[in-house]
Image (cartoon, rainbow, N blue to C red; front, side):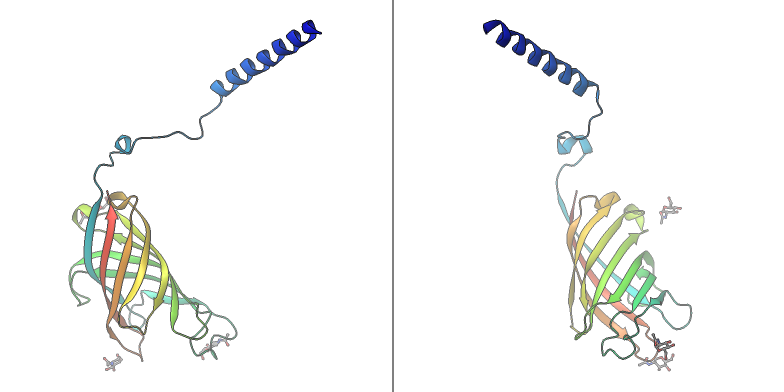
Length: 190
Ligand SMILES: *[C@@H]1O[C@H](CO)[C@@H](O)[C@H](O)[C@H]1NC(C)=O
Ligand SMILES: *[C@@H]1O[C@H](CO)[C@@H](O)[C@H](O)[C@H]1NC(C)=O
Ligand SMILES: *[C@@H]1O[C@H](CO)[C@@H](O)[C@H](O)[C@H]1NC(C)=O
């Protein structure tokens, strides 16, 4: 009896050792890192201020790409989807200095109110922000005086970004669909 137990223990130990060797040889899937190893030191809070321009008339930077059969009869244009690539400027005039672009998708996603789904990347081109992006995923209730959209992430200078954007309408031409919108952005990043 004792001999059988001893043999079994021996087998178990052999299997365990073998498993350990295999694990040591396999590729590593995850490991803990210190924030310093990625150069992440102190978290910063940055405020950005810019204007975004929608142009549907002359040379469009926003185009409708999809709609549903019910979109035309819906009071909110429910189901329409537009894709945009519009300039971000330092001043409210379309001709003022460009500091980036907004690229993404806007969908009418509310049957009763003007509530739009925004899935947009803000790509900055100015100075130290050149090439860095912020990603926004949220609801824009366009008829409110001030709307709040969450920042869900970012790249470059904005790695690990989180924060929010406040936006209001500077002007909107109902007949052309052209508009300009002010943005105040508050973002945590490293
Ligand atoms: C909606 O109305 C527009 C403009 O009148 C028309 O071009 C389009 O075909 C209509 N869409 C549907 C799905 O009925
Ligand atoms: C931004 O980066 C791009 C690509 O690296 C470069 O071509 C461009 O000149 C830069 N713009 C500014 C304003 O630094
Ligand atoms: C809207 O655009 C049309 C066409 O360009 C123009 O005639 C009209 O004056 C504009 N309305 C406002 C309020 O700017």
